[in-house]
Length: 163
Image: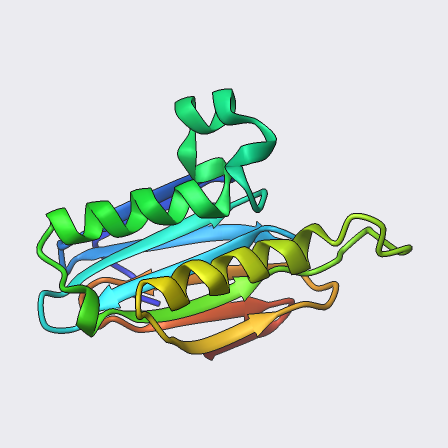
C-alpha cells in the first residue's frame, strides 16, 4: 500500500471512483458484504464498492437513496461512474472479496453467498471477468486499491497479499 497521497475510505454501502494516480481507495471489515475492485489499466481509472445486500428489490426506496447498499444497483453506479471517468468496459479488471458467513452458523440467510451470486450475474451480463477473488469463510477482509498502479491488496488478519 502507498504511504503517501490521498486515502479514500469507502464505508459500508458506499463506493468511490478515481483517476488520480496518487489516490488509494480502501474498504474495511468485509464479512458477508462484497468488496468489488474495478480497474482499467489503460485509462488508469479505478473504483471500489462495499455492498451489503444482494438485491435492490428487497427495498426499492433505500436503493433509490443509496444504490451502493445493494450489489445490483451498486454495480450499476460503480460501473457508470468508471465509464464517465474514461474507463472502457472491455479493459476492466475485477477483483472481489467478502461474501462470507461470519455469524450465520445455521446458514439460514446466506447473505454472503447471495451477494456473490448477484455480483457474478451482473459481471457476466456486462462481459467482465473476475481476475482475482477471496470469498466465503468467516474472516473479515480489507481491500485496498492503488489507483496509480492498479494493484488490489487483500488483508486478512495478519496476512496481506495481492488479490
